[in-house]
Image (tube, rainbow, N blue to C red; front, side, top):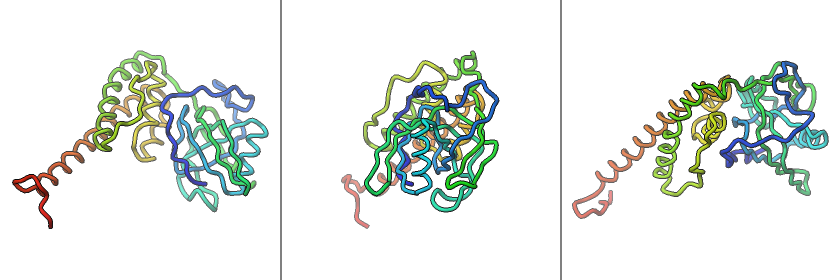
Length: 251
């Protein structure tokens, strides 16, 4: 399966009610089809997927028929296509919002991340992996600490967006009205940050919103400094190649 880098939505969406959703506050495990990917899915994140492997076509059909989610977990070891991959312990349930079927059996599906889970065990005896998962709740979302950290992160987000626009030399289609809710802001930033999967997974695994916001504050500062250094270096190289007339000398 390919074409799964679709993080277009940077607000936290509401998941549809379903008997098969993870029950918040419950410590019981539930069975969930598992889709290991080279991407970190966050609650509220939009994730389009192109499904072509027979095992995952079967999985999607099962989820559509039973109106149940499947679990997305970052691959720790292995590959997306072929033999079974080893997933990270923390992932996010994906609700299928739309299915486009093709004549040859392939599918394009639109999914939205709903709730985090912890994998307790994985059964590889079927054509696709099935995990026993437990709800991994988000804590301390409405604390004073979360509110204070939100106020410190907000200006960093604006500065980061401005640096990205300078680096890409184009106006980004970003929502300038940032959420006033710490939880929504934390997941919006987690989705929007252009960092590697290791950093993304570390954010997903943090238990509480204050932890996420504190880590995001550091990541934003790091990325802003990196982009600024990159822009300064490009400017210096261009200046060194310029002659007194302002034209670039040929090599």
